Amino acid sequence: MNNGKLKMLAGAAIAVAMTGTMAMAEDWRGWNIHTEGYPNTVAMDAFADLLEEKTGGEITLQMFHGGTLGSQPDAIEQVRLGGLEIGNFNLGPIGPIAPAANVVSLPFIFKDVGHMFRVLDGEAGQMIADGMEEQGIIPLAWYDAGARSFYNGTKAINTPADVEGLKVRVMNNDLFTGMIAELGGNPSPMAFAEVYQALSTGVVDGAENNWPSYESTGHFEVAGFYSLSQHLIIPECLCVNADTFNALSPEMQEAVTAAAQESAAMQRDLWVEREASSRKAVEEAGAQINEIADKAPFQEAMAPVYEAYLASNPDLRPLVEMIQATE
Image 1 (tube, rainbow, N blue to C red):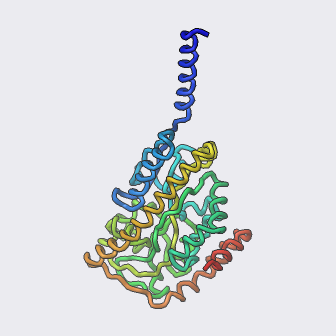
Image 2 (image 1 turned 30 degrees about the horizontal axis):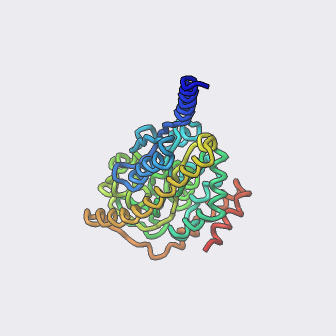
Image 3 (image 1 turned 135 degrees about the vertical axis):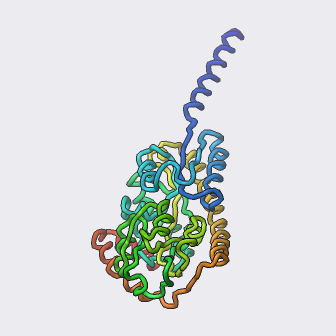
């Protein structure tokens, strides 16, 4: 075979290889509700960089922060359907879609944040992940979202009686509406972006969230009493569309997962720092913080919430018991 033919064949092989590489390249889009500088936002941007690095540029990710592509429930549906590939979601709104994921939204199910991560890193966490995958979403990594507590503009909350009659904003989940109802309050599900205006105009009396959210949104300006009930410790996930992930080669799946896990390690460290700085900021601004001396009455009031959950999901009783038994 002469040199001319050899060169032609070599050129054709290179062209085929390049075409295959180009076909494999994927441009992903990601959703995140948090603002610039928030631990999750920093970590998601790092994930995008790590993703490109670890996949050799075969996967790139453009992040959209601040909920610019829609509300969290809308974005969850978009990731499920493949309109978006990536999302950073709280498991609260995922719970109504994936019953196994709803277990983390049971009030006081976790003893503390460390207990939550021990659960998620074990068999119970895999059961939750499997339940989410059945609904089209795969959690690649778990992010810290701290503990959620009550805040309002009129009084400190120390007992369930202090919640009676209060209109309290919650995420859209029957477990959260049930929690407030059992405490004698009036649950008011609404989008997170609407809460500041609702608090300032009296549409709601209070809400519940973690330190960074309370501070970064300015909610402390219109709801200056923060009561450390720590009733919910709900993780956030870095999630991917199941079909998109499962279509990747094993090597690409490993690279994507590794990038997600590295971003989660970063997010958890940043979260601890941000919690401390957020608490300091709102205290210096005049917010009144109160420790709840006895949380037992709040926990006891949740018995009907657990009963209703398990009555609707009897097959998830072993998961609840597994979490409660985890040390």
